[in-house]
Image (cartoon, rainbow, N blue to C red; front, side):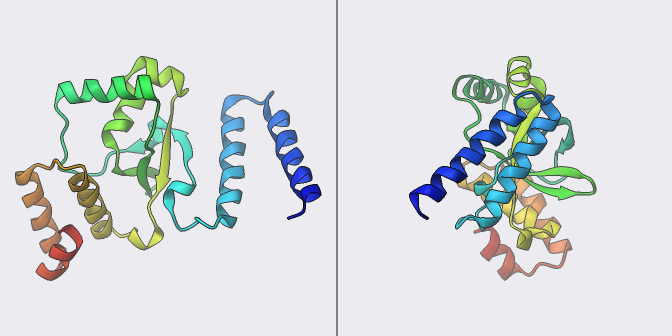
Length: 183
């Protein structure tokens, strides 16, 4: 891209930002999300969910019905302190489900955005989200994704994990697939 085209493009972006300054918050966030999505659609990283962080109303983000991960009160307080001090450094991993935004990973970050008065005010009632890849859209794949996220953090409750394996077996997953997907 030539220097002239780059300058024109960047000036258009600056004009867009100036044009939305006077909008009400919901409309401003909607337009920013749409602009990010347009940029994401042309990004060389468009296959990476983190390339498009979308801010959504925290009340629209709901828990899944299968996550075995629990956080003790001291760690929950630490998570709140972390988000208060460091900001949101990781978006909540989600998938659209029945008109709501279902958590795949990050339920406790979602709780902080809803329950912490300081954080809720700072993020204006919104939560940063990414959507997992469309190939992971069925419930079995979302369950496996949740487990991988939980295990990658190094903590996981064995009894709850056993219940998940039983559920996957009941959903006709073979032992080999469970072993491969949940390592």
